[in-house]
Length: 207
Image (cartoon, rainbow, N blue to C red):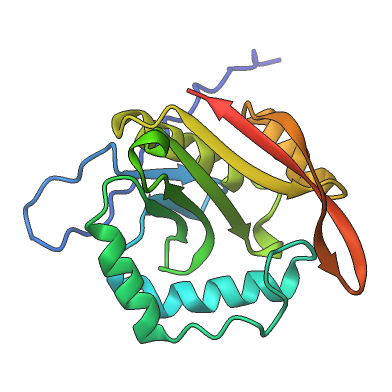
């Protein structure tokens, strides 16, 4: 009998995104590629104004699928041009950004919005909003988005991250606890969904 040979682990390499300037180097701190299957790569990167149309479609689709988002399905009326202008303004800010999860073929499947404090006494903190398409949940995308945001926050002198989550959203609460967030308190009757009141946890993480 031939002895069993253990295969050496395969080394995964990140696939850099195409640069707008040929020959320019890709900053590894701004774009991270993660391999989830043998054929599909997921790129975690900061959003760009040219993503406006795809981003609007992504948000509206997430709001259609999710039970606990702030806006109901069809309630958001943001146009593509309005979204592009918002992203252009965000590019000029040092305390706010959006990270997206992008498939190899360019499809956006998730996002994590970072809204920084607007005055001196709150510029050290940021509020987060996450959304991931239903068919891509449970694949580690949320964890990767949070990891990337934490790196960005530290580099931008942000030491506190916070978010809210409906108390019945067990999957969301589990994800946030897994990434180091702790429950600080509860917002009672924070949302009205289908005529019923829902409480939200206020969760935070200090960096």
